Image 1: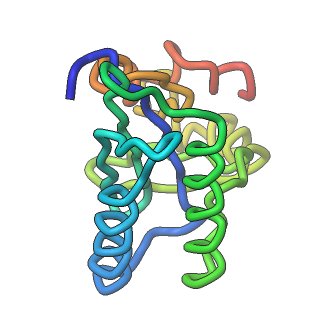
Image 2: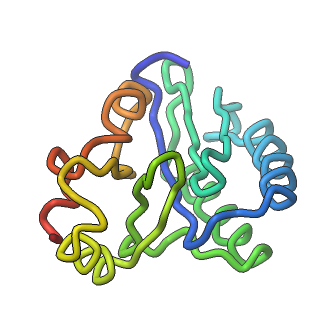
Length: 153
């Protein structure tokens, strides 16, 4: 994928089991192979990361993702959430690293973790607002002090 490829990050409200990851990845592969924009195939892929995130990447250099194609991916993710009893749309859950482990905390709990020195300005958080592949590589995992999450602590 080129660095300008468009990116969508979905974070689950819990860590996925290995069996779920395998099953979800198969569904993602099937979806992205058939994902179209105005009847033109999108050059796209999706993958599960850290048993917590699903990331879609679409190279729009030949075919752009239309509103309808984006809606298809959102409906796909809503249905995936229903099937696996996962909420991929709660933006008040923040993910962060504790060593090599990924942890998820609600915004209010995140504030308490900071106040109690469980997390600090150097804690790595996930900026799920990245817009393209280059930002994903450079700005997805950043220290709390360099992230918009800092506004909540």
